[in-house]
Length: 121
Image 1 (cartoon, rainbow, N blue to C red):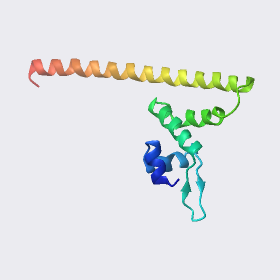
Image 2 (cartoon, rainbow, N blue to C red):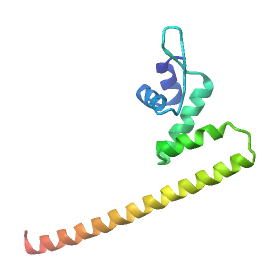
Image 3 (tube, one colour):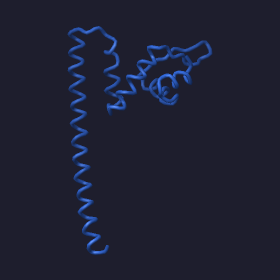
Image 4 (cartoon, rainbow, N blue to C red):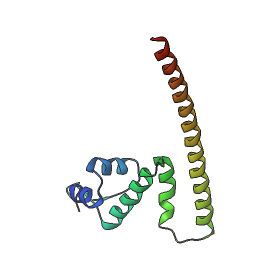
C-alpha cells in the first residue's frame, strides 16, 4: 500500500512514516516508480514503534529493541531483553530525577511569586 493508505491504516501521519524510515525504524519496500510500498508487517511495526514512542522511549532505545522482536526466544534474546529492560529502567530513573528537579524549580517560583504578591512587586 502507498504512504497515504499506510498512514490511514496505521493511524500515523505520512510525515511520521517518513521520519520512522529516516531513523531506520521501518524499511518499506519501493515500487518501480520509487513510491514507498508498505506491507502488513511494516504497518504492524509502525504500530509497535508508535506505542513505544507514546510510552516515552527515545528512538535510540527503540532502535535497539526492534531487531529482537521478531527473533525466536533464546538465551541471547533473554540477555538482550534484560539489557533493554535495564536501559528502560535507567531512562525512567533519569526522567524521575528531571521531574523532581522541575518540581523543585516550580516550588521555588511559587515561593517567589507569593512573596512578590505580598510586597506588591
